[in-house]
Length: 233
Image (tube, rainbow, N blue to C red):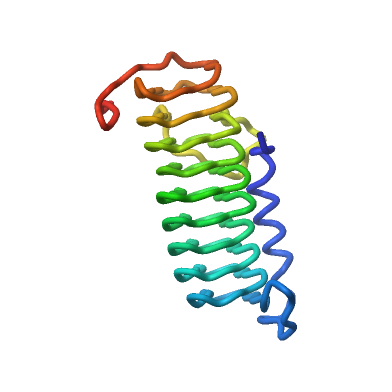
C-alpha cells in the first residue's frame, strides 16, 4: 500500500515548485508536448498525444481518446473522457473523474475531492484520497485503495488487487483539516473482488455483497447484503 500520509503533501509541494518554469515547452518528445501553467486550465484535445500536463490554479481536461503522461494540478479538477491513456492523475483541491475504458498506468490521487473511474477502466497502481469519496465500476485496479475520511465504493465487477485501508487521522496530517466525526461508508458491490487485507484504523460501516470476495478484514465487521445496492445507513 502506498504511503498515504506523505503523498498528498509531496504532490502539492512538487507542483508549487514547478511554477517557475515556462508556461509551455516547445520541445516535442516521444510522449508529446509538455504544458506547464501557473494560472489557467489545460485541455488535451481528442486523439492528440501530450507529455506532462501541469497547472497550479486551473482544471485539466483530457478529451476522449487523448493520451498524456502525468496530469497534475493543485487547485482544480481533473476530468478525463472515454478511452484516454495517462500515467498518473492528481490534484490537491479538486475532484478527479475518469470515463469509460480508460488506461492509467500509474495511480490517481487527490487530497480534498472525490475520485470516480467508470466502466472498463484499468489503473495500474492505487487510488488515494484524504477527504473525498472513491468509486469505481467494472474497473481493474492493480494497487490498493486508501483514504482517511472518504467513502469507498468498489462497484459491480471491479477487482482491487491491493486491499483497502482507511487511516486514522493524526497530528501528522496538519494543516490538512477533516470534516466532522462521521463514519466512512465502505461498499463492496456485486461480483467485486478485493484481494489483500481490508484494514480500518477508524470506525467505518462496511457492506459486502453476497457475491463479492474479499481478503482479511481488520477493524470492522462486514454487513452482508444481496440487493443491487447496499442498504442506506
